[in-house]
Image (cartoon, rainbow, N blue to C red; front, top):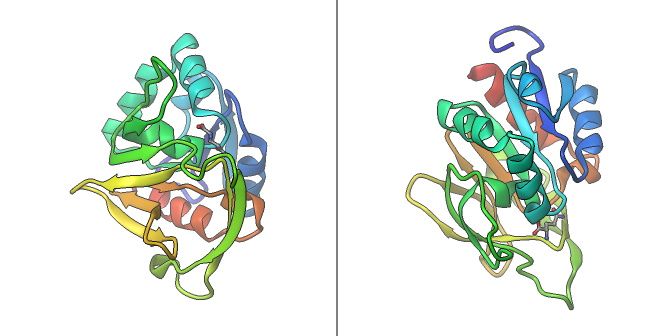
Length: 199
Ligand code: GLN
């Protein structure tokens, strides 16, 4: 619950690497639960949308009646952290989506899916993230999106050496193109939990 010492946080568990996020959040002392149904969404004070495949997550969220409650939660100010496919789900505009692909939206961004092409399916690099301080964050990108346009309401938190934006924030929303749940660096999850406690 919002305001309590250990608020319950959810991880959208329709598809993707939700188990890894739950493990990181629990390691940080959070009461983390998988969210597959509206009743579970109603119990959480914050939500992580994991990596996976955004077109599948989109279809499943609409099929299971979660898309509209998720949009309402985002609009109401619930802290939501999207990684990779989760960031695509949060973006107002999705570029290179499959036919008919929708997002939940809320984040004033245009995000391009699979932005690194097939020659470079995945890669790792170190990123300076001023909001997290030193040291730089080791970041793993897997068929990752990039933020192509950062809208007026959003802020870039980290960019690649070539300037492409890969971490963003907007009020209650946080997003990364990469996968901090895979590297043992828990600073983005801590940043998210601080948002949940402050909300
Ligand atoms: N390429 C995937 C998509 O479009 C995202 C990949 C990931 O989440 N690791 O949803």
